[in-house]
Image (cartoon, rainbow, N blue to C red; front, side):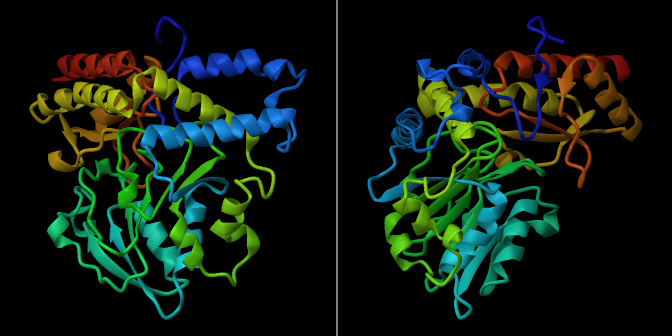
Length: 364
């Protein structure tokens, strides 16, 4: 355990939050802004809460330089509900959408979309056990597609898009749940970006949707009210009671990103953190080996194995004893995974790298 008695938290989600944000929330928890109430107790129609709500939207727009022709929505249901909302709003039974399969979450999105219209695999790396992102020239979609869907980062397999496909007039829809806010992104290249908050944005319970306004005008109307993006856009995400505390926390995380120097600085820090661990894997002479191909490696989720299965179990057990949390790979694939999201400190990644070297030296 480190000197501040905080765990070395590599959980894949819900995941580490900036300690500065947690401490500020602790200070304000009982009496927010001299109101005599916690932010959790306030009406979502109150001036105090609306200021928090609107400030969070404004900060996200500023950090990403989101153009004026986009709406920022705060929804619920996680990224998984977006697997349904996207096709429900934008795919009719006589239309086709293209999905690029790069892991379990894109598979789940693909499965949901089948309920609404015709679905095409524009590319897939499943035959390669999702070890890489498809080359851009491998992607096949039609200009008549309703949209093209990707998952920008794959938490289970540890792969991440470095360059996004250019889809021309076809809206590109991206599930960015596990790498949103981790680097600069040109939002204008996308029709829709959605993300559950519980990796880089804040606690679980909030889903951010960034959507181009012209798409709202083209969306299906004969669907339930709460599942229409337009319902939430017209009401500034206040049609029903939003997850107020989660949005407050999200706003504080955005302030923290600003204080750290913005998305360029966050990306640089993420590269340095991931390099610590990848270097140990690459220099281990096969004692450790990664799942993802080097050109597709994720900066958010580092997936790897120990060459001997019994040693792998010992590695995970000793890591837990040393205060490292969340290093087990996803239950569907096993192995090891270090999720190095924005709020995971450099020192935590350095501690893991040192532990990995020491473990190898002791067991080689």
